Length: 496
Image (cartoon, rainbow, N blue to C red; front, side):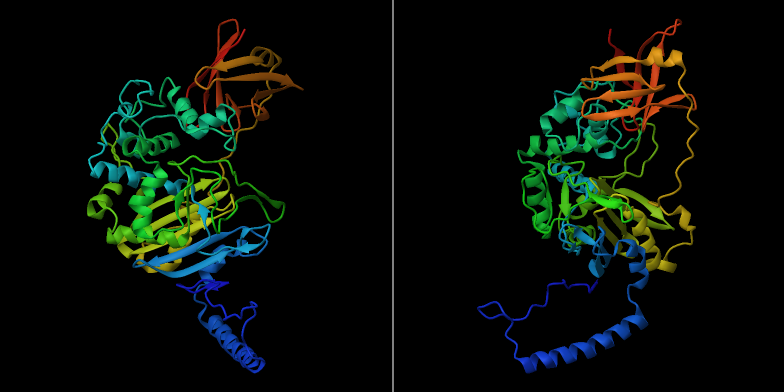
């Protein structure tokens, strides 16, 4: 159902009597029905000839069904919504339709608000971006180089990613896991992925710590600080950092995994309450108000706008595209300011073309959807010849083709005997058990079903983790290290 910009599905409601029934006489009702039929037919014919959003709607057509999760979409020109629609349902139990006032968890789109809070603290003189984080987190180890606040902002700290660490430690996102425990897990890491400042590697640990830093400096949780300094001044009344699982959220969408053919399954995690790296709930209509601030500067003024769009520089002098929770890049010759989000089956995309004063805002509640790819497809339609020609395959955020995996090789009997055993990681506080079963090697850890190890291309992997075994000349295995993308070189030692 098309929602004209500036209107809600429930914006026209007839007057009601005390009994709750519409006060409409039969003759008036008949006239209204007749007029509605004429107007409806005229509007349908006009829509068929003009099709104002047909191309855009076609992009979201796979989810535009009441029995499917889907997305909310907002197109912004010059700070105003020019097209808004909901596709699919916010809640499949009740088949509640998605609208642009539906509240979604927006995943890492949250980071730009966490970073804006840090930028406001810095502009106020409360912190320096070049402060050693141990000034605020004395419990953190003294690594080979100091980690600064700026390193956290730009993902150049080398800190191992908190969510990957939790997975490696057998801690589920739905488990009750306090902020203090999360900080302790980050602080338990005796080394970083690389020397701070040397490289860029996306790390949720940095943004989780930034949220904690806001509280330690201002005395206010990020939820309150962002409300007072950003959300309330901009009128973002449906936006908050969700640090209390019991908080009731009106018009909240649930999230799902799966597909229409095999069936959808609920994937929302009610216990999850971590903020900073994520944790923001918002709507397309509220994100419009934040998008508008990039041009009005109502919050923070020119100083904030310049700072949050300042990209990082590695110690070696190489620039990166990551700024303050935002990626500053280009698409088809036009400058872009963007960030995507993905968590618990929720997906979101914030895509801005500043020179064209055009933005695409997408929030979704189905894991397989890739909203940034959809946002660029919308931009292709709406901006058209304003952009340089480019092959669709080069569009950022597209799904792309999966890399071909080398063929698996069987473990030898000697390898199975050598690898089997228990291994302990002091940094994770967890024991892994490797065991042989029907000629295969399986890994077991707490809260996790046994997982099959795969040997291929000279590597041993379990899912996205790579295990590198240590052994002596006699073939005895003393331990192994794990590389898991955003976490590298975690050491496990064999237990007697």
